[in-house]
Image 1 (spheres, rainbow, N blue to C red):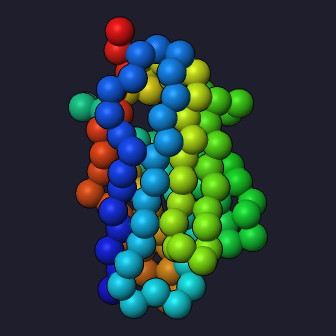
Image 2 (image 1 turned 60 degrees about the vertical axis):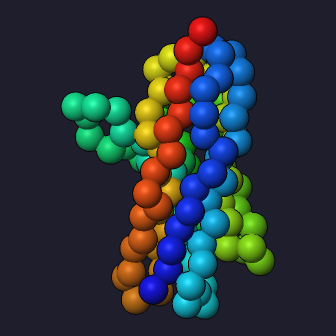
Length: 116
């Protein structure tokens, strides 16, 4: 069993930056992959960025060049550096991790609001 806790969200002006963090705790031996999703009211949750255990990354087209995902295996933490934020990036951001055996865990979500 693992617990994921996100931090770093909040209110930022357009063009600003935020760094989200997601720390995993519990019975963790290894993590296959980590990712960040986001969701706005009335829309499906979408994958924003992911990173494998080999540090291979992928991004949603609309965030390429602005967002960077990274992970610290020793700390079982994943980060999402978000630069040049736009109002369209406003959403609840969720952390997800994939573990051996097919287990998947979600964080509870954290709100990011981009507004002047």
